[in-house]
Length: 251
Image (cartoon, rainbow, N blue to C red):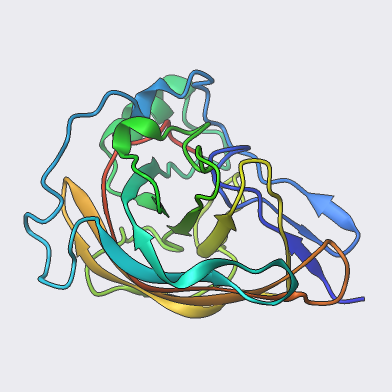
């Protein structure tokens, strides 16, 4: 039987990087300890265009975010009305040499960050996302997608980096990440299974203290939790999003 991978959106359980392989589900876990998710709330509006290249336009813009096949959704020219990105501090501590207080202190200042970029055809922004919400559409007929990227070495993500899908194994982390992940929801309660591995890449076009800009070209076969593909989710285009305050750190 083909391996079935189920992506659980990063913020619902942990970080949009949980997955299941074969018949034995394995859930990604982390050491974040802020159940309120308030760290990403109440952020002020920012000028997402400042310091970014010309191709990184703030919303509204269009991207391809589309499921073809039996559970078709999205569009080859989805109008992105709202977007936001959550910086995710990574503090390698597999050996447990750092105390919780030390992890929090390092997480508040570290440049070793992953990013979860959310986009949708309805209005929302950095004040609407947190570690535990903001990834589901809120209005009937609307949709939201997300793409996450993580470094697999202690070198922080930087402009010009090209990230390809695969397991993040270059950091001494307790939490299990994938280097690149994505998901798409056409309804709030929608769960989608994925087959095999994501194909494609993500290029970092811009990254400032206020915003991130990604050139995304990704595809992933999906199923109904069976072993046969029903179609393919494709996310392609330039995603620009203002940054929310960083989440609690993961180790």
